[in-house]
Length: 225
Image 1 (tube, helix red, strand yellow):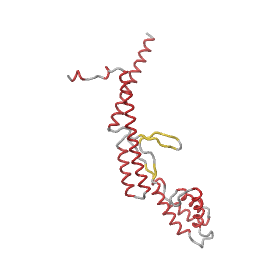
Image 2 (spheres, rainbow, N blue to C red; image 1 turned 180 degrees about the horizontal axis):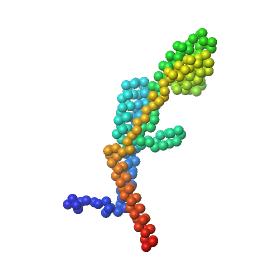
Image 3 (tube, rainbow, N blue to C red; image 1 turned 180 degrees about the vertical axis):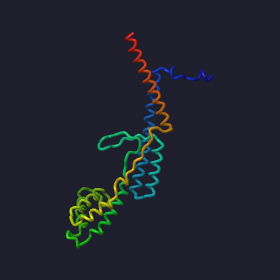
Image 4 (cartoon, rainbow, N blue to C red; image 1 turned 120 degrees about the horizontal axis):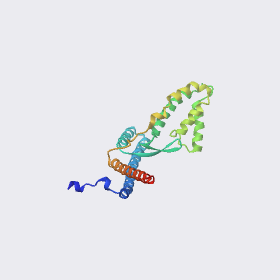
């Protein structure tokens, strides 16, 4: 009974495999899309926790995102220097608010050093702050909470030669953005429902291609007989 119930793959015709392949491709795309959407939701949760300035929540959400990404087939399209590329994983993202908080702390420390009336250029920090606040208003920045504001402050301070030593101190104290960059890579294949469906689809595609190659070779060989 078992032998009678077995369906051998070589007995299945190619057109039947093509009929099976079409819904399988649709199912694969749906499952991969679901996993991509779930990854996006978890990544957005990380960014929301970052915006709320809750370090414990950020750590928790990052762990959830990492565990999901490492255990699922997450296909993502990311922007790489203006070019779109496909990658397995979350793609790079930044904890922007944590960086801004650390950068502002460095600027506050610089303020106490630069706010010195004995400086031949006057209160350098106050001058830089006045210039950058004006730019923040005209450009719609949220002062103190916008990377553009931080960049403006550093740029304005660098205009004063008397503050060279403090400029070096500011550059050294400002954290590297790479410290707040996160990216989790996903495996190419996982033993999940999505993984097995994709595997079955690939097997069927390989069988179809093999049969087509054999058919073409046989047809060509007949031409020279």
